[in-house]
Image (cartoon, rainbow, N blue to C red; front, side, top):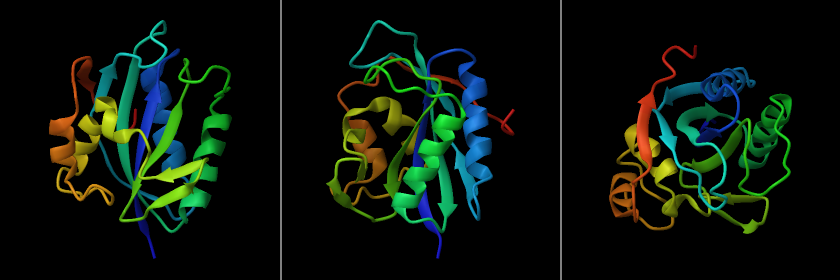
Length: 169
């Protein structure tokens, strides 16, 4: 049985676009994983810690037989392999990979894994590319479509379409 994952990608240091491409390639090479779609890439202002470079963000739809815990481990391994070092919360990063949604799955009792992603409803840099890929997908906790959630986000200011990853480089 395959699960449908929506995974956000972000990078704001070095060759940001190249890092997004590398991350998609790593995800595509996970055992039995299939990249179904990739959103456009958006350039976005940093949140929380404002004194850092702008981010490039995208969302990838992945079908995989992995359960959410195994998917989280795989994504953390990809981040580590790509050189991510966690020093400052919300600080600059080579790559950031987060599980946004996994079908109708809800996991709310673990601090290291929350599905749906606990902050996605407040983040235009996540909702804009997610709405591009899956506007009619329903958020399992709110019961609203991603399109409606994207329309309701406080501000989309600072979220600009940058381009696409094309055929992943």
